[in-house]
Length: 115
Length: 107
Image 1 (spheres, rainbow over the protein chains, first blue to last red):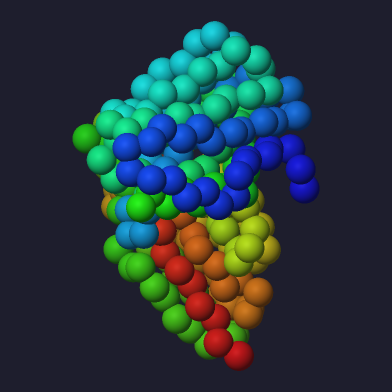
Image 2 (tube, chains in turn orange, blue; image 1 turned 90 degrees about the vertical axis):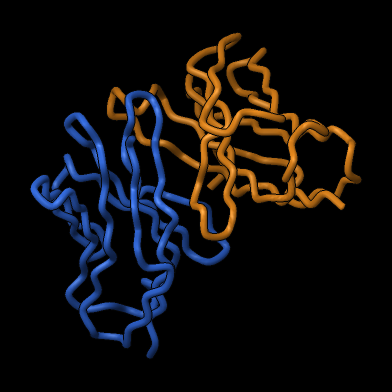
């Protein structure tokens, strides 16, 4: 299966602390994405990156930050400014952007619980 | 605004019964639609896309521009079809997902 690896799978943090979720892919994909999945709300796009050193805000970027220093890595930081951080986070990647007909592949996800 | 609506949170059928998972969309341009599936303990994966006009695992989906729908259908459900299904719409460089429908197929 491999391809996209997210870590950790489960993470608990105290309120007010920043936390970084890791996403690594060995598929040589240019584009990477972070989605948040909440019950009854489907998947919502947080950030995406078309290429190294470039990224764009998605629909719910407030309280999150990302970096794309390497092609294979796209870590997501959930900051203390995020009001409802407890959620399931999905990382994804594709060869190119969906506008070129490319399929998006997903990681297994990370559960973040903030107490 | 671009939107994907899946009106059913849960759909329960018996094995062998026909299945239709509903998906409606709103999009100002020419839509490109997908169905993604998440089986228990597996990652979310692409099931099919409308431009391919393919049948995957017995599922088909036809784009109906007049009704702005992209319903997923299968004539005879199997227990292994039990999963979470998401309809998605491509909006330029992003995918917009619906809220998902959980399909339960009982023996």
